[in-house]
Length: 213
Image 1 (cartoon, rainbow, N blue to C red):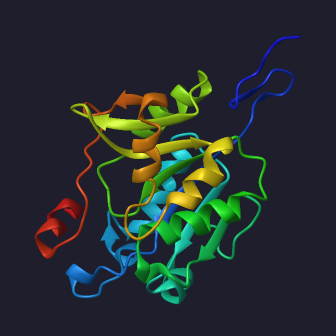
Image 2 (cartoon, rainbow, N blue to C red):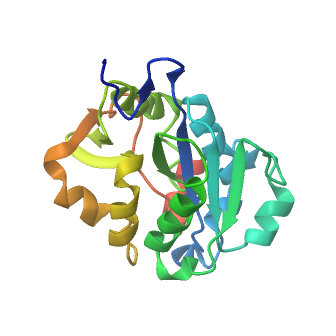
């Protein structure tokens, strides 16, 4: 009997890879401006980031909100309220850091048939569909842990095959996200260089708002 990877069902073709967008940050160093509500190219930054996941080949999508969640839900032009393709969840513990948002998203995706979760952050507008597609392709080739790299340094997007979700969730504390899990399993992580198509700059301070220009 032919073996299959996490990424492929030989009878039905590739199984879905979910896009998990962490968009809960409160923008403390931006004066309390929720990052999801920043304007970028005529739309909200959360809308842009979700579009990147979709255009990169992910689906379904899960968007984790936190700071300003009610306003994001009211203003965003995605599939709101969520339908079959977009799940929107609130993280009441968003202020504790990225780890709680990652756990919230993985819990929500457990009800889907996704083979993996590809994770991006709302505040990295220079990471586009090309980087998402490269990371996704490495998973389709059989890798269960994948991360984009920039000049050899690990960054986002990162992808976790479903069998890793429980371990990732256990290790995701504070603002570290999946860092500890990836470090512990460094030998199993496939790094995909994306520095020629993306940049990992994030928006943390008022000076970083120039990235939205």
